[in-house]
Amino acid sequence: MPEEKEFMTFEEAANYLEIGRSTLYNYVHDLKIEPRKFYRDKKRYLALPDVNRIKEVREKPWLAGERESKKADGPEESAV
Image (cartoon, rainbow, N blue to C red; front, side, top):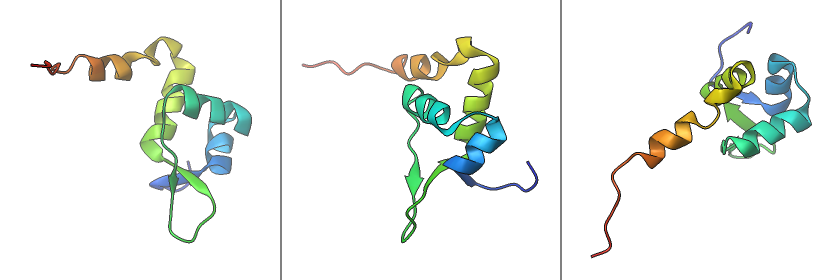
């Protein structure tokens, strides 16, 4: 990546990952990534760590569910 950014547009992220935008949308949906919008800007953005996570999952698909399982391992609340 030529310059370090905190956020990338969907177009920039798709070009960086060398995938189509529709494939990028599928990854965002499947990995439950929240795109961000900024004041007075119509574009949606992805945080750089989220883009890197998609890159990691593309290289090692078995890691896709790992982050969700870590959240599930947290303490459970009992309904008393």
